[in-house]
Length: 111
Image 1 (spheres, rainbow, N blue to C red):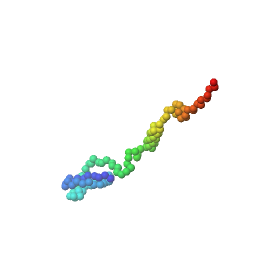
Image 2: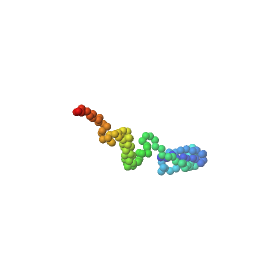
Image 3: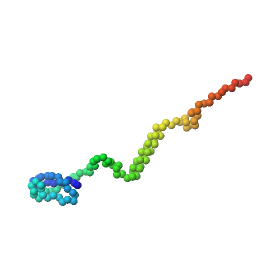
Image 4: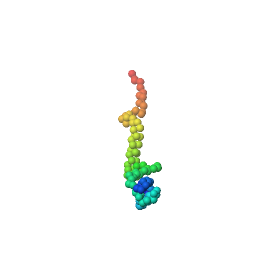
C-alpha cells in the first residue's frame, strides 16, 4: 500500500497517509476540520527488496542456469587439464625413457 502526501489549503497542515490504492482521497483536515484537504502528486518510490535471497539470478529461466553450470564444469575441466603436467618423452619415445637400458655383456673374443 502506498503512502500519500496531503496538504490543507486552509491551515497549510501537511502530512502523509498510508492508504490502499483503491481508497478515495481524504477531504477533511484533521487539524482545522475544514474540507480543504488536497492530495499531492508524489514522485513515488522504487521497489526495495530487503533481506537475504534477493539476487538478479533468482528469477532467470532454467535454460540459463543449465548453461551456466555447463560453463563452470568446462572451466573446471580446463583447469584440471592445465594443472596436470604433460610429459613429451612418454608420448614421443613410447616408453623408452621409463625403462633403463639393458647392459650388454661383453664376451671374450677367441684368438
